[in-house]
Image (cartoon, rainbow, N blue to C red; front, top):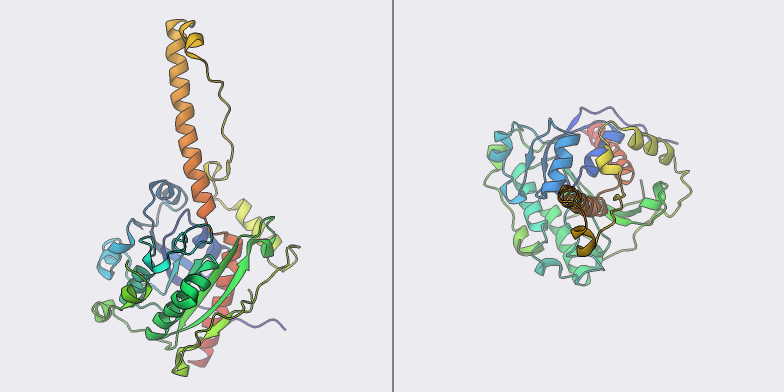
Length: 329
């Protein structure tokens, strides 16, 4: 039997480490959420966000996120925070330095969480997050959520489970507040802070659960329930693919994945050209190099991007959690 979801008020969302907006596209597919601000430091990604979502402000640096900086860009309310935090500190393809890696932003994430005090949060990262530092880092992450009054669910979703031809596994963490109300004034929490920097570093699948109300956090790195079907018959794939491919925010500059060919001439061949042709050739070569640079940035952005079709069922799960809390309140 399909679980009934009580209609919710539109949830105001702060999108951290936004990339090119895959997380926000995911909740746009799901419905019921509104991103009120992005936080993204990469200039190319900022350009894509400005093109897709010109009405949504961007705060470039997560270290600058405070209630005051949010007020300054017109954000007065945040119900939830979504964050695709940098994955190199935990990736199996890297050195897996976790808390010792300066790119680890979990400390900043928990600082923002303690400052803004939202009702819920969703974090996305690579599966190596769970095993980093022999599982101790993930235990610290769970502890920080619990210390801030959140229950936590987590699990791994593969892009193949929503019809993609590649695996692309990612761990998703859903944290939701024990209390139906988190307070009415940000200023009350401005001094709250958190010790996340010291703990976490210097700077719809069946989710595992960790409950803050137990007065204990189950720390073991447990087997992760994983959807392995890639047949595209999970009830989401066709609808989500259609939404993504026809969404007005998707542009040719994002979806294009080819670079035009350019036949480079030797110095002797260039010297044989007329002066006008030489100037034209050098101009074309400069334009070609610019396209290659943009293409490189595009590939990096796409490679780091969150798959919206994977994020959408995570938001569906969150809506069920929030609906249940609303019924019980």
